[in-house]
Image (cartoon, rainbow, N blue to C red; front, top):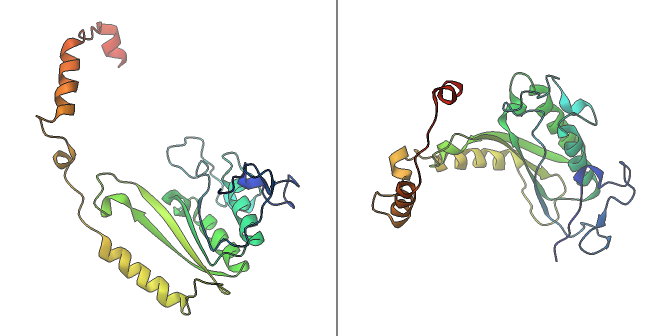
Length: 212
């Protein structure tokens, strides 16, 4: 019974599509008055280091649109925040949003949250610090409303400080690579080994090897 919308960058009536709040699932205009929290991530294409065409503009969010639609989706989220009163908001994106090329974008986002009545705090968290065999840094932003309806936190700075302490306490060493592998006699390993033994060997000529 959860609502479903098509495009967060066009949800607000004042930005683009006047029917932007039309719920695709319920086939009507649905509000968010009874929603206490928002957990959302927006497009990272303008920031991602894996995107060779990523934006070199210091402040992607200074414009309403960008080539990778990071600005479009971010402004859609801000419009959503302006329309609905959330007690708390958790935003996520790649850590490159706060690197030397785009440090201004984090300031823009935190400033917009403040304009809409939220105190906020950001953390850069790496999955490898929490026992996962993968280096994956992400930036997380927690915002708390000045006028909450149910999730009441009196001292926001104190709460953010406790969250920082909790994040540090939860860190643990990641497993070594062999610890993540199945044992040699695992059924899955034996099936894959048998499959490979039954398959014809790959025959690469010298040109293919050189190209590889």
